[in-house]
Image 1: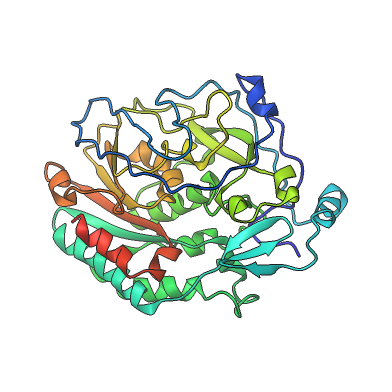
Image 2: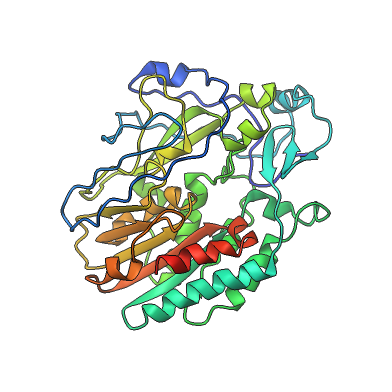
Length: 377
């Protein structure tokens, strides 16, 4: 059974990189996932100053330097749902005849998906927290909610016995917004089943999935998004994600994901890099996007339009934030799980603010997540 939002499994595309060992590197079998340690929250930095990121997590630190030079290559991931040829043979070799539930996962021959539990109170509390931000910023800025569905959301009718409706959870949340505005990320990704929008071995979306959400946000916020033609794309094969660690299999080990990232052909001057490539024998990680999660981070650009975007986010926001760079002079980033300061104090000196609360839908399962958002206000 092939699923929407994933191309069939084919060998990873070949990519020329500055260090040829990176392209040919076989990923090691990941060890047990250790809980990440929150990094120390840096002080707010004035525009024009360089922001230095320090990563403190279980994985080896990524260098806070400009990315290594990687030759641009058009990603060659398959874009059809055909089951013939190599893809069909590979799936047969997976050893899994029928999808099955393993704890909080739905396990398929060639991918893993997180199950979703609907919590109406969690949806209401999330909306309440976002509305509180909108009231606090009234007259100074706009507030947007962006709940990002996970891939199982698009096959939930087929698996309704084991997973709840994320579409309904998003609708319930957005229906309780008044001063804040909900961005339809669900609709932006729907109908794109032939594109590589989610990883097969990880719980995150790809940069391309985040791009379509960025277009939906731009439409809602009233500005023109850039076309992908304005970007060069870079493919890094050999990524085994968090979900693989929960349910490792020889098949997935032999058919890892590919991380594709995008870089503006004519980028503005930035206070820090947006992509952090691994060095040496470090494994590929979703942390190449923004270097991972920090309590507070900031990107200052040479756009010089006076606009500020504040993003309250979980790790899904990391692949999304780079798309904002052409449109804002200041981008302030807050992780409510670890930030200990005051959002309103950090925003006090800025005007013309767009505040985005971006999380994947699974946060609505936990009403206490709203307390994190309210706690940094």
